[in-house]
Length: 105
Image (cartoon, rainbow, N blue to C red; front, side):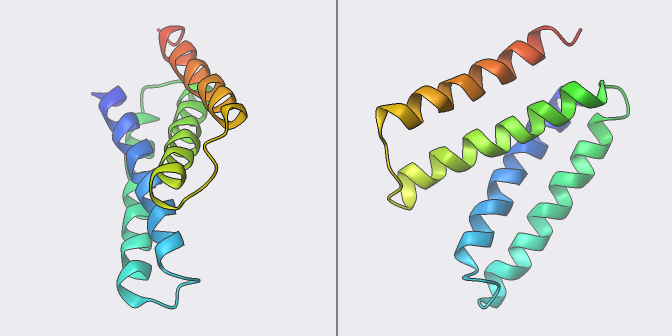
């Protein structure tokens, strides 16, 4: 169950960053509130995952999901660059997250 907590925490991290962008510097109330809720849920679920997972691996996977997910959201919805260089480095993050998961038994 701890891996489910960790993956969902990473997804909420992506939601947190996306709502932060949409809040326009916290000037839009609805998105600002959603930002804080998503951030709190992300940290809470991470704390549940840390009850039984190694802190180094769990934190790296959580930040990796957040970073990779944020880049993907940026490319899909915010017209950020889709250059082959960004995709190569995004792949490196994803490979690292998978590698940490596989070796964290």
